[in-house]
Length: 226
Image 1 (cartoon, helix red, strand yellow):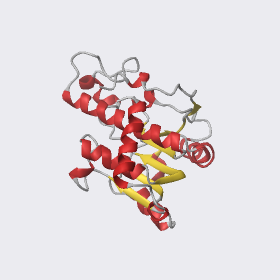
Image 2 (cartoon, rainbow, N blue to C red; image 1 turned 90 degrees about the vertical axis):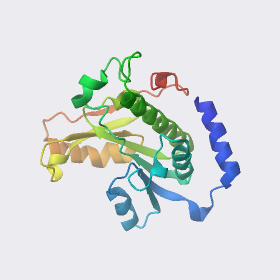
Image 3 (tube, helix red, strand yellow; image 1 turned 120 degrees about the vertical axis):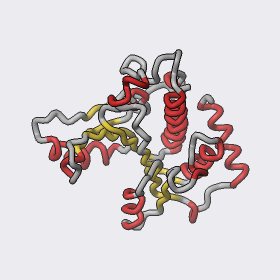
């Protein structure tokens, strides 16, 4: 599906469900929410929030057509300047699985031939998340993607995304566990989390903090995610 076709899908959703009314608008949405800590925190701050995860119901499996439409239906409710947070499942993208997935920095989507079923499913999931991110960006909704620092998912960053690495070991985790957050939430990623990253890694630890050039408005770089 091309980004131009995404517009057709969103138009169909609009025709089916109508315009988003003010009382339906969201400030925050946590996708792949798990125990929904961020969603709960957003609600505690008085924000209008929703969370999605297949562990709540199989209807939220975005690998299915229904689940993907459900994702887009919720994402479109996030108001301009709101935030979407995606903690994409990482097992297929981290270094521990490279021996079975055969992913690499050169071929982040895996070799074109002989991809396993699990790799194809992970690629499909990443591609559908990429379409949601594209919709977020074009609507003016900020987004953050969360993944372990060894994840190859960041190879598909777009929109002049910024990223910062923090260490969960500084927040109670049993291991150092570096996690990279990347996205368009400029103030969040450039100020607060940069300070958190410096504090958790140490002043001389070389916190990863980068800008990425904006890409053209097509999905050619996602063609391998099939």
